[in-house]
Amino acid sequence: LFTFPFQLFSFYLNLLKFDIDAKPGDLIEILGGVYHHWAVFIGGDEVVHLIPSTHRGGDLLEVLAFLESSDATVRRQRIWEVVGSNRFRVNNLLDDEYQPLDPGTIVGNAVKTVGQERPYNVATHNSEHFVTELRYGKPESRQVSKCLWNLLNKALISALEQAGGKTAW
Image (cartoon, rainbow, N blue to C red; front, side, top):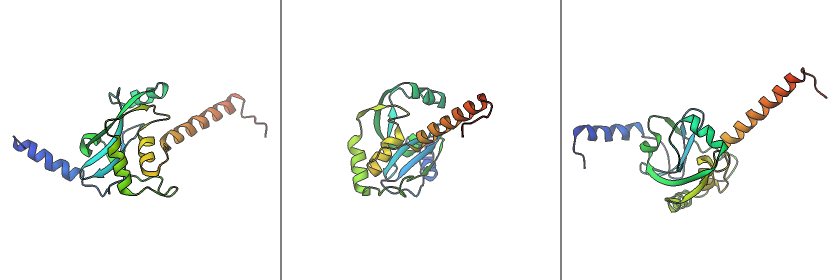
């Protein structure tokens, strides 16, 4: 299995680095600059996630993806292959709002989607939409909602400043 001592050392280092308190069906948020990537933990050291087919990495490319739609592939990978050097956390962000599906159902549905091609758009069909649909049966993206809210606030502030701070109310 391992031909060099370094590979064995690297394998054990990855196991220690990714020793997380995740349970099958938990959502994993991968923190990476402007845009966070999401995956579903399916047990062992594996996750299922949606990755754009044109993904080349980098936040600028992710932001520009707002302007275009593409396709994406559902992949099953070891968590450290997906996370790389980024920080991550278990984040079942909508558990207070929605009843999560049974962990076996979440994992089973996630595994069934592996290899599928799906539409991808950062604003409407991103990795967060994908995992929240698997966990809760409802595709939502808080980071998109937050971004749109921030843009709306900035536009409103800009409009008020251009109007000289005068309001009709």
